[in-house]
Length: 333
Length: 279
Ligand SMILES: Nc1ncnc2c1ncn2[C@@H]1O[C@H](COP(=O)(O)OP(=O)(O)O)[C@@H](O)[C@H]1O
Ligand SMILES: [Mg+2]
Image (cartoon, rainbow over all chains, first blue to last red; front, side, top):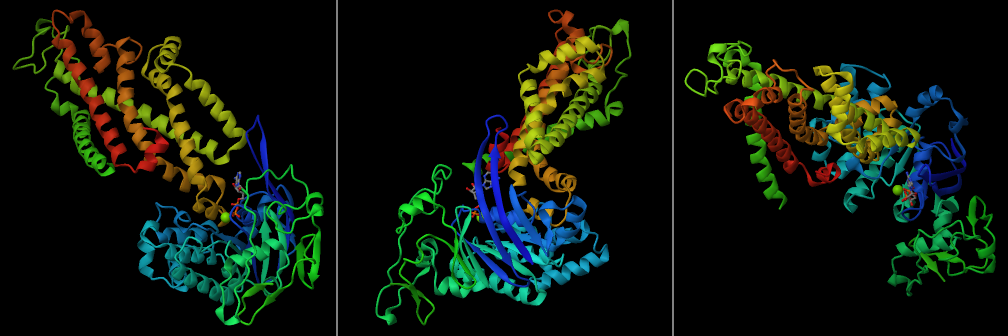
């Protein structure tokens, strides 16, 4: 349904003294119809940039994006305009997702007007329908964005994209700026809507727990590359990449019933702004507790540790296996 | 601190608004307020001091100065508002395009802006009117030639921060064209903070117009424009100072009221907007 093949993004600044950074360095994945892919990684690794490239808000420097077999990256503007409504995005910060001078009703009417779907009186009916679909009251339509809470705004954002009956929704950390209690409500709503409207979803998150709950598959991103990808169960059941393990470590809760404390893999801390161009080899080498000579010399190829599971690490075979215990938590032996 | 500024701002806002409202009323109802025809020459009544029949006295041609000051409001205020509006709209359009599209077009526009900013304002205006000849159109042209630059610069900065906000990306994904996004989302959000700048510029422009007219390069002599009136009255500055005092006071008071309004607006504006405007 959605297939991303080796997309890259280089940001350049300055006309005369050009400086460039490669933020996304060859990302590939595919998402099947109606499924959810969780794109996970720490802040600044390029998740949002990938999301924006999928919805065509940013032009990829290289690579291909295929939507139902149609290559978006090489589509002429007229055909792209036709496809655009089918691919929507929800942003991280709900406070900025709406024109502050428009009432909610105007923002919700915008997709209808822009695409000339319905007009006049019918827009009002559809807007009313939408606001109830996402569990809000029609009275909210007369408010301004600053009069609604973050959770309510994120619901409106969902309503706005649903107006176009999208086939694909990129949800860029839709709940990371919300309170924990509200997070669960919005995520439940998203899941419910997905069941009802059958859209495909790319769910971006820095929180593995949240991604696990939402996703059928997980792709772990590190500094602009996917380092591990597979079914949610296999990523959590047998994580292969040291970085994935470290992320899992960060969500581990000690379980006294198991009779032992978990040993959490620790990372060597470095600034994420390290110049990558100079360093050859694996991009995780400077933080990896298992880094060896080969990791500094050669970039790790994608290996297949198990069916339908990919990992980019030279040493994944040498790492101690991981056991998943009955409560679903992970133990590093 | 901010609360104090807001309170102070509200007072200035109120005073400025009342004064400007007064000037506006003078301009609109000039024929009803002015007791005499401002152009009515009466040689036998020349250079009368302020008194019962002539509130501000008469000038060298025996014209009633009060009536001339009242009609002058139309020229000074109206011209200043026209000039500032053109500058504001031009700057907002060009700055929005530069900020929104970025890249080469942005680079080009901002280089032009930088070059124009290096010129001293009033001197370039003098040159333009000097070359094209003195007339109201050329006066406006001269004040617009450099005036749009400041607004372009500030608009661009505002647009750069607005365009990073989610609703711009959302509008694009929902199918909005660039022109739609600039007109419906970018400009309406960049406009209110620019209004502060514009209000402060009105007073500046009133002064520029008066200065150019005083030098004979703006509104021409028999017209009751305040700067032109000052120019006509300057030969009597020692013998009959009242001829110059009244238009001078009118200029001062109108400049003061727009400054009060602008600074009042600035103080009630939120601190973040102030930072962008650098006022
Ligand atoms: N328009 C841009 N120009 C230059 N650098 C950018 C731009 N957008 C993002 N970046 C940089 O790209 C990196 C990845 O950003 P982002 O995709 O937002 O990461 P994430 O969403 O994973 O936190 C960051 O270091 C960020 O500073
Ligand atoms: Mg992000």
